[in-house]
Image 1 (cartoon, rainbow, N blue to C red):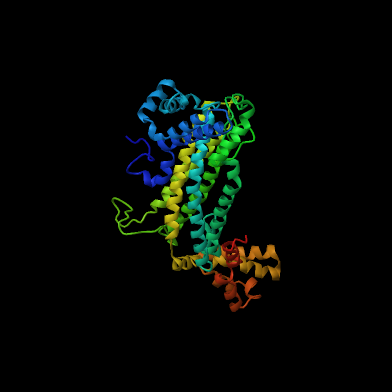
Image 2 (cartoon, rainbow, N blue to C red):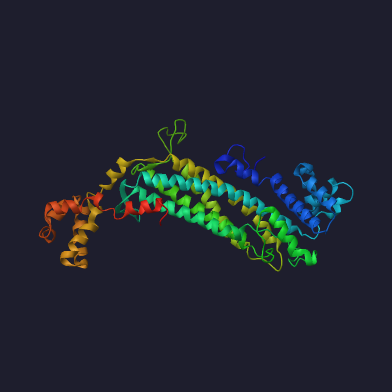
Length: 448
């Protein structure tokens, strides 16, 4: 019986990707542990620490298919230990006495931490593949709408004109920074550990560092400069990176929700016949996918706080903090995959209502252009005086429901400096998008 949305046969794909869930199944997890044990045996055999025949047998039998998961669970419950059932199980399936060489000189957390890094490595391939897809979609969207004018908003109110392409370019630059963070941090994060009970390599003695180096090379992971049993910053950094990605995509989803509101209608998530908004209101086109992104984004962001808590360890190891990572890391990866999946669907077919954008730009009857009028007047009377004059005129237009142009024309403090034609020029929003198009082009080319 499923107990979470991740496990639900009905709702699992609302919350995640199937390929990501696979990485955090019991079978995949145990296979990662077995791969670490096998790599350890191979390296130790090459160094003459254990017999070559033993290593060959361990590697041949280090397959999750050789384990009965129900029996594994019974042993784990009986021993209250996460790894001993695997060690004993691998020992039992090895011929002769070769199983006695399983797990030679390692400690439980060595195997489990390094195994988790193999899972994170696989998860990262999916996460950053999808993020690169989103980067490509946003690049095309910014290029397509580099000149699509709309109202820029601050504090939820009309501020100044900009282009929709500029708004998307801000998203694009933020996504690229997350991709850069991964490239810059992966060598810090994707690091295994094989240092023994308290991290001193005592069990393997002089061979300790060489064994660790070679095992990590076989597994495609980095070698730690010192044990990280009690130093959990790598996992905290990874989960925090996922939280940042989800925050960015959550922000984009929220913007789409806001601009999809009936009264605004500038954007909308894709709609196909058969998609139902309400069980009682047939007309509804609700932004359900955007709302799903917001929900999942919140979950991942809070996982980052727990990951940071996991950094507070006791002594050389602390299972109380360590166990939280068994839950945090899979959930962060799985829910992030859901955020990315939904974001790809929404952004690649995003509905952009250019006509509504232009209509909404004029809702305040020209008031959105108060700034250029003020700066033009400032050249005549000074900045602070111009601000006072245009403020009074703007408030009058707003309160009385008049057009900004009519109020400007009627005010002697303005019309003595500007002709009606000049005022029309100053009130043209197409002429006041600043460097929007130039900046968008630079972002698209990767120059900024």
